[in-house]
Image (tube, rainbow, N blue to C red; front, side, top):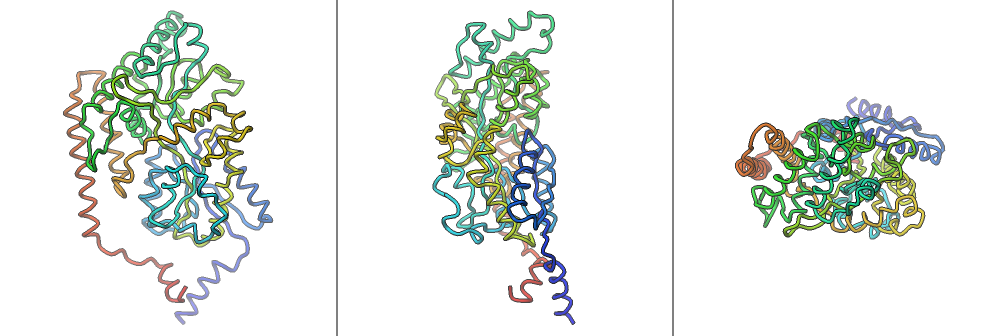
Length: 447
């Protein structure tokens, strides 16, 4: 009787030819629209035999992370395919399917990926993710304003500050722009993007959050980078950035009310839509170095596609992932300024015609700085939360009072060390997880 019930259970799930896959997607920029278009094409190519349901994720990355943690901890069937920030792959790797089991060796041009992206695809020898698109932090600037006011394209952070302040003061002489125009907008809201921005500016000042295998957030270079951000907040930006996400800062810049903006490459095509106030007036540059020992930088971003280990349709899900991430789809996606993960597409004439600034991005991707996700492992989300909350607090407090940056960074250093070493202790003492029902059914039948 027991075997009959189990057989009927399995038959119920596999008897239908029509399978509905569930995939997650964010709604930032054109992501949702492009994904649905690609899915429609895949459904047609598979003979309209299957369906795909898109689950729209919360806008904030940390809310997406919490949702994934809930699903995967419960070994739930809620979703088959998940789009993930590159920093999360190592955190969830144990709950992700090995995609290499579903592809032949020559189906994916592994050697054409940028090295940093290639490393992010694997957990040990298991290929658990494929890149939907790459990402790297960049600075957008109003080329027309720099030309009108005879200002140079900045080569350092200090030059950017000086140019931004000069043009801001000149533009604010116009009564209509007095309380609107900013020299520089970025994202300082307490969420993952602030961790990205912090890692990036620290790198550009010659510092690093992790040095010689240890947490290093109270270094002199990091203190200098925060002092610079405070100056930007007070003098060439607006306190509203303390609640800005990427789209908030894009709105300000796109309406013609800022000289410089830190953002991701996705914004390029949106800014240059003929309906915007800045279309044809924008150029990009790498994150500049500080003047005393820094270097040009750019934080590595990008969203990857993974298949849940608990999906009932892993083979079909892997087939859709392969289509979503193939070179041709990345070429199509690049028309909307989403960075390809393949090196060869940065030499494609049509891709470069659509996105001339990709030439600069290619170099940034080769030397991009990464968030400390590998160092903190499964506790990266906790570490990132401590980082972005601490930085947001320092910036917020700096408006009303003189904040003790060194003291706050020492406090953060202590918290991050606690997170790192508590991870080791918890791994030793963690109880064996009870085997899920679906795995017991599979083991019962020997497959």
